[in-house]
Length: 207
Image 1 (cartoon, rainbow, N blue to C red):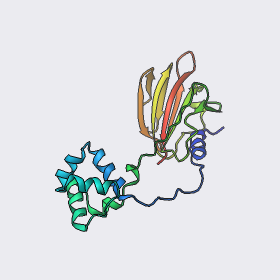
Image 2 (image 1 turned 90 degrees about the vertical axis):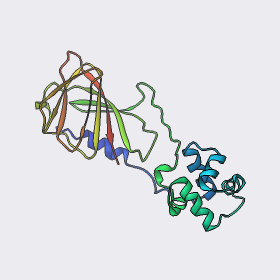
Image 3 (image 1 turned 30 degrees about the vertical axis):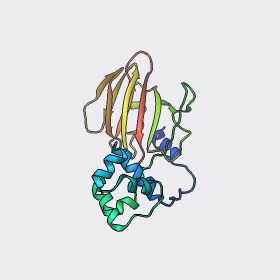
Image 4 (image 1 turned 120 degrees about the vertical axis):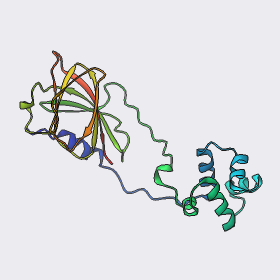
């Protein structure tokens, strides 16, 4: 049977709902976020921008609309452009997302070569796919060709000994605590070489 499960797991993780709608920007909150992100007090930020502390406080609390001159001073003081005051990068926004998977509570997907336990399933639209895997395969002949899929991948050996086969490199034997980071579009296979089935943590990028 062709080993395509990692790709299937990636497709499963990408199933989500409708697109999120961007909320209107609150300039005061944006300025406060930028100031705190730099670890500045109101006094320090006001000094950097050449504004009175009371003026900056009123801007942050939505008690006044700054003039364009004040906006320019703010941008210079915060070392950004004026448009960046109104168009915060998506990654600057804190989502506060959290998912905890207790030991053994992940969703299991078994094949003849690997047994995967999908982790962090409570979150949709993830940028990474983490899963624990028990490596059943003992030789590359058990695979129908190379496993390959989009993204990059991180592998960390939890127990046992594995051998990492890749399309462009010599096989690498890895033991508990060893790790590898590689291009997942490059063909790769992992087999156990210890007496017991080895277990590894895999993290695959989705973005």
